[in-house]
Length: 254
Image (tube, rainbow, N blue to C red; front, side):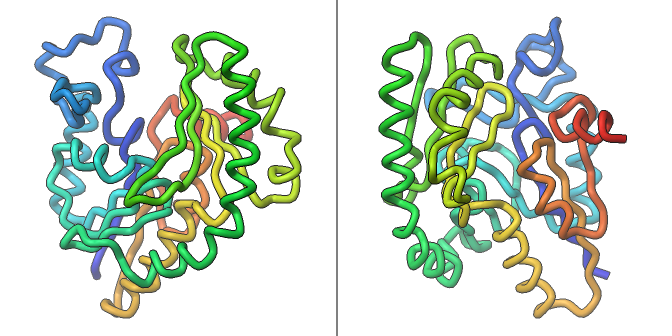
């Protein structure tokens, strides 16, 4: 039986040094650098347990990264992925040769224009609000020459501050209320996305592809956030790191 795991990266397989523990430092022999900034400095690390997890997965699974990272940020992850890759929260799929999946991209490009003006309209309001405050950083994510979605961060790195712009501008916007756009908040990351961009749809596309290639399959999904849950629900088994957004939600509901 062929086994696949659809694997979120940040906060699942590695995380920033700050999230590795109060006493963590980059020289700790128990930590391994897993991703780097554009200047070459390490900014994401795997704990000893996460290193063990990777080694275990490598032995028995075909590993498919499912990440919010764009193409350049994914290239700065130093792990030997060999299968397809889902980027930009599901907007882009790369094949094993790291070329754009033409069928998936064609479908995206046909549907995306219906959401583009709505995204830009809401984003203008977001930028106006953030300019009147202090510490906000806003960015429209452009990858492969296409504008996909928007991201907001704050220098204090807390969800509480990001909830201010969420409540003031985003939650009650007509394009959010009618479902054309949706938002996602996890840590110091608030994203606003067209509804066609989601990890679940991209993973479902790959599952159907793999089913055409193999007769006996088992699928695992691993992730830390609310937006990972839908793609994990497509799988036979789910893996959730402790003390993450999704873990805490399930712990409370249980």
